Image 1 (spheres, rainbow, N blue to C red):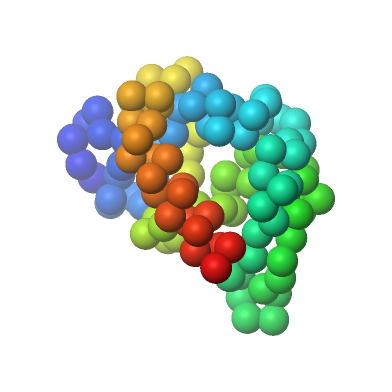
Image 2: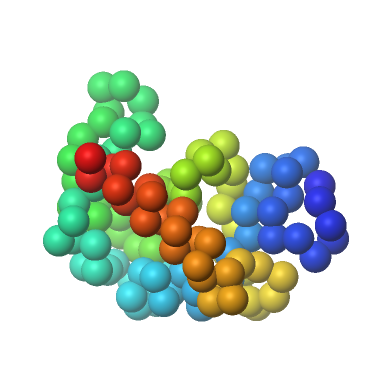
Length: 112
């Protein structure tokens, strides 16, 4: 792994992200469906060939947990996303610029 307080564990391929930060991105509780990204649509290029399609996020994922489990930031497709409910030792609003940049790049790649 990395430093004990690290949000990224390379040895176990885990990226730890704060729940409240993901809820801010998702637009509501992670346990609920969100229409925040419906105006964009998404191409599921990361899925196996033959299962790639254009989807409307609120119709494809029942909640934020399933969305963030499958839709990962660029360069982290082999990582497990761990949602830190206690919001401790995780990527959060202080890490916002880095995470938002990664998600913006990801969304750009999905759309184009």
